Image (cartoon, rainbow over all chains, first blue to last red):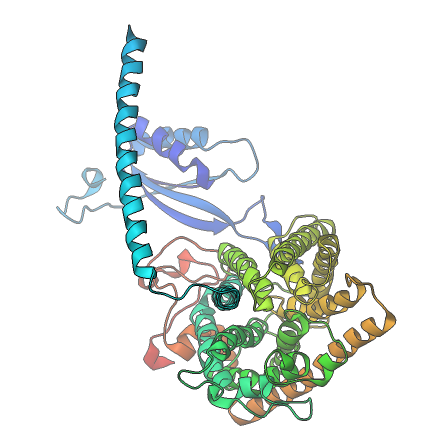
Length: 112
Length: 488
C-alpha cells in the first residue's frame, strides 16, 4: 500500500478530486494548510504599513491506495493540479505498513 | 375578433369600476357630512386661533425632527462599535462591545445626573452651568422641550465618550475604562460644551460670546473625544508587538474589514442626524446641511483613497474608510455656514490630512488602532478652522482668530484633564491589563467569554472553522492556545 500526500493550490481541489475518482480512488482526506516553498509569500498593506505574508494557503490531500495504483494516482494529481505557474505544489509517496477499518476490523488492502 | 372581445371586456370592467367609484364617493360625502355636523358645535376658527394652530404644527415638527435625529445619532454607537471591532483582533471583540455598550449606558446616567446641568444650566461665569441637574428643569405637565433637547444632547455626549474607546482598544482594563466614561460624560465634555453651546438652552459660554462657530460639534464633540483619545493612548502606551525595536511599524491586523466598513456606513447614515439635527428645528436649513454633510464625506473618502493609492501603491481600505469619517468630522462644524462647493474642499483636505496624520502618529509611536485621534482630534480641529476660512458670509482675521482660539481652548482643557484622569486611574486601580492578559485576549481575561466560539482564533488569517478542542498544532500557525477559566 502507498500513501500519496499532495499539497496543491486550493482552487484545484475539485479538479484533483474528479481526476482521482475517474481512476477509481473513492476516498481521501484533505486539510487546509499554509506553507511556503519557492513561491515564498507576498506583501500586503494594512493602514499604511507593509507586512510580509510568508505562509500561503494550500490544500493537502492524503490518499492511501493499492501499490499498483500509486503511479496512476501520482499522474492524475500532477496533471489535474498543474497550472504551470510557481506554487503548484508537491507530491510525496510513502509506503504504508498497515491499514485497519475501524468498524469491521478488516486489515490490509481490504481496509482501504 | 379577438380585439373586439378585449374591448368589450375592458368596457365591462370600466363600467364596474365606475359603479364602485360612485359608491366610494357617495359614502365619502356621507362621512364628510357627519363630521361637519359634529364640528358644527365648535368655535369658528379665527385668524388668531389659526396662527396658534400653525405655530403648534411647527413646534410638533421640531420635536419630531429633533428626536428622529437623536435616534440617528444613537445608531452611531453601533457604527463606532463595528469600526472598532473590525479594526482590532477577534480575541478582544467582546471587550469592545462591552466598552461601547457601557460608555453609552453609564454616560447616559452621568449626563442625566451631572453633565447636562454643567453644559446647559444657568451659567453666571461663562465657564460652566450650575442648574438643571438630574433633569430638574422638567416637571410633569410642564414644557417637555427640555426632554427632547436632553435626548438629542445625551447622544452627542456619548459620541464624544465612545471615540476614545477606539484609540485605547485591546489593552485597557475594563474597570478603568468605566470610570473614564463616567467622568468624560459628567465633566470633561460638558465643561467645554458649556463654553461653546451653553446658550442653546439656559447657559451661556465665553467662547460662543466671542462668535465661535461650531454648528454641530467638530470641536465640541469630535476634538474633545479625539484629544481625550490622544491622552489615553499616550498614558497606555502601544499594544505589545506594534513597534519593533528598530523603530518599524508592525501592523496588527484587524479581524473583520466588512464589519469596519459596515460601521462606517452606519456612521455616515447617523451623521445625517448629527449635523442636520443640530438645527433642533424642522426648517429648510436642513437641506443644505444634509448636502454639505454628504459631499464632504464623499470628498474625504475619495481623496483618502487616492492619497493611499499614491503613497502605498494600492487603494487601501482602512484609509478610505477613515477618509469618509474625516470628511464627516470636518464638515460637522461648518455644515450650516458654507456652500456645497466649500464642503467638498473641506472634506477633500480632511481626506488627505487623515492619511498623513495616521502615518504621523504611527511614526511617533502613539498606537491608535482605529485612527480615532487623526479622524476626530486632528480633522475636528481642521473642520473648525475651515468654518472660519470658508464662512458663507465672508471671513476676517477676527473670525479665524476666534476659531483658532476655540480649537486651542479645547486642546488645553481636554488633553491635560484627560491625561491627569488616565494617570490617576493608572496609579490607583490600573489602566492597562498585564502583558499576559493582553496576549491571551481581553474577552477571556476580562469577560470570561469568547466572541466567536465556533471559529478558531488565529493571528494570521482564518484557517476555516476547526472546533477549538480538535485544533491541533498542525492546524494553525500562531494559534491562540485557550486555557480553561480556572487556570487563568
